Image 1 (cartoon, rainbow, N blue to C red):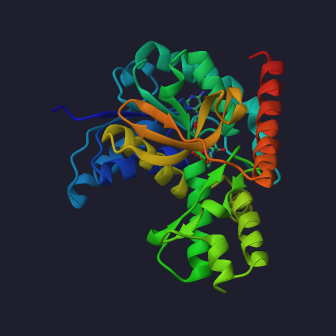
Image 2 (tube, protein in one colour; image 1 turned 90 degrees about the horizontal axis):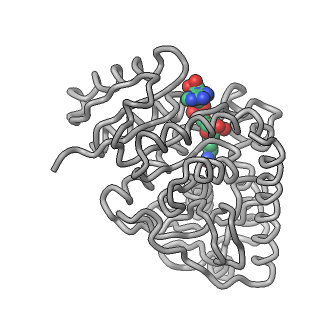
Length: 317
Ligand code: TXD
């Protein structure tokens, strides 16, 4: 069977890390694309030159011609601009809106059958714009945010409970912003829900509330520390997990930004919910029952996303 082909639109901090992780996991050949000079070609060549050392076979090229992505099985989009200190994800809307139009055109022309994973912020509206402008089926265009937010939540919970991250599961829904909804009821250590762990004396509600808050502000915490740019190792690892589930038909159940058509009572916009990702792309949207408080938090997060979409539409790009 021929090797899979993964196209990376954007060869910056996340794009370069994506290429390296894809190589190490030997998921397929890589084509990197960027508008900025030789950065795509340079990173592709550099990472390919690490392949004899780490023992993986992946042909990697880079350039600024969309024709090179022809026939890609997966396209991962990071093209755009990251946050700087003091900037919100929403502040990126205008800058990255125009970029999505260009990327959508490139994918529509050269890789219309690909599974597209969007990372560019503000994520929930950028992935919606990418799907609307590319015309690809909604089940083949998803946004990466929930896997990252859940990974941050899992990291903090594992530290709190002093257990392996492998045994911590977490559920984060809603928009990729400060209104995201970490669901402690469905987050567990080895299947034991967090509320039970509070009753068992493993932690307190106050400490869990602080962890939920730190998760919701996880991106901003790193932007403040880095001063230039935003997180890229965990975002890249999260997107690769989604790509791998598609390429290997793993049927992972992952929180992703997907188009809702009636699920959770919502229509015609993207927001983070648990989905099954397999060879068919988004194969199932998992609808969990919400408590009153959870529904209120989810609806508030959806309202924030809907406002971003209407702001995007007002740009007229
Ligand atoms: O969870 C999430 N979804 C977020 C997403 C997690 C972290 C970062 N998030 C966002 O991803 C971030 O706010 C940015 O919007 C993207 C990419 O972040 P990255 O850190 O990789 O940004 P870089 O290093 O600036 O890389 C962006 C590249 C850069 O090389 C530009 O030259 C290129 O994008 N770029 C373009 N490529 C193609 N086409 C166009 N028009 C273009 N414009 C810029």
